Image (cartoon, rainbow, N blue to C red; front, top):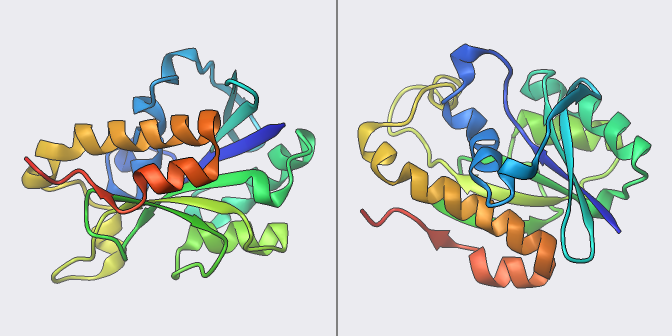
Length: 191
C-alpha cells in the first residue's frame, strides 16, 4: 500500500524558517530524511521511501500555500493514492506551540493549504498531522504565521521538529492508530 505525505509550506528563502513552513522543517528532521532524494515534479518536490510494509511518497508543494491542492492532486493521481491514505502535515494555530496532534478528516480551521487540497480533491477525508504554533497574542494572524520563531520557541524547536519526524515515522511503520495514540497532544515545550 502507498501513502502520500504532504508537507505544507511556501517556496522562497524569505519563508524558509517561518511558522507556516514548519512542516517542511519536520520532513527534514525525520529519521528517514537522509533517504529522501527530492526531485522536481507535480508542481513541487517529491521523494519516495519504503517502510516496513508500505511505501511513502513525500511531497513539498511549491505552489504557495493557498494553491497546495494543485500539487497534491497530480501526485496522488499518479501514484493512485486514495484520499484516506494522504497525510497532510501542517502548522496549526489552534494548538499551543510545540504540541503535536493527529486528526482524521474534519474541519479545515481556516487553513488555506487545507482548503485548497479539500477543494481540488473534493474531500476533507485526508489525514492530518497538526503542528502547534499557537496564536499571536497581538497583531494579525497572517503576519504571525509568516514570521520566524521567537527565541524562547527556538530553544525547543529542534526537539519539536524531531518529534514531528518521529510521529511520521511511527505512522508509516505502525499505522495511524498507533501514531495517534503515541503522539497526539504530545508537547515538546519543556526546556
